[in-house]
Length: 378
Image 1 (cartoon, rainbow, N blue to C red):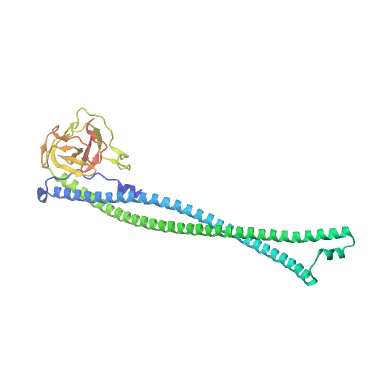
Image 2 (image 1 turned 60 degrees about the vertical axis):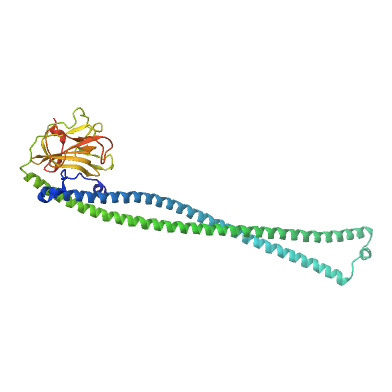
């Protein structure tokens, strides 16, 4: 992907002077300093980009959680609305039952009232009246029992209706409380959904701003890379035109006794960035502070801290467009302008810069282009 390719930190051209005071009289060193400044600017932009990408990952995880919470809030709201609708239906049914019971009670009271009025209008009904209206003793007893049953039935029916009315009233009141609680829960669910909707919008806005900032950094990094490539060409031309330097042949293994290669020259997954990139040298593991030897005669054209990726480094120009680089040193043992012999100690193995442990990254360049160092040690 374009973004991944941008993020991969390309190895800068292997030359840069340490003594700033000599730069004004040396076009090669001037170009090297500009190259390093671009490398630093690009590194700063990449650090910002990496920071934004980490923030983006965090924000995306937060947004995912918010979306999950929002989905839960939607479910809760649906359930609350269903519960409210259900209890409202129950309240409506209970009210209808209450009205029906009230009507039954009113009807029964009206019937009883009519009977009482009839008795009052016709005079007090007594056992003597019943006796005179009876045909015999058996009829008299039957009429008396019937009258008692009628009165008791009216009283029981009234009591029963009143009890039913009270039960319905209690149930209606209970359902109304349940409805009020359901309404509160429904409103709470509405508020929760609104809250998560707002959080989601805010998070999406933040992510959009982060993406915009990343796009701006991508453009900045692309421009810096383009400027860097132009300077690389300039440096290669100046280096090739320098015929007065020491000419040496690469032939000395920089770490005698340590011949294991932990990472070959070529394309690989970078152990730090986890991105696919060109490994521009070979990695030779060795204990920290192991003396590091020059692979050939030459002139030291850089010694010191090179970049966040390479750490402390020494670069030697061997003439005819050939140069070697020795990054990640714990301490350098040369300075800019030194003439070194093949096999001379130029520093000590370390793990500065982007490194997973003490080692030397031996890098060979021909006219500024990385080549496989092992081609010189067969």
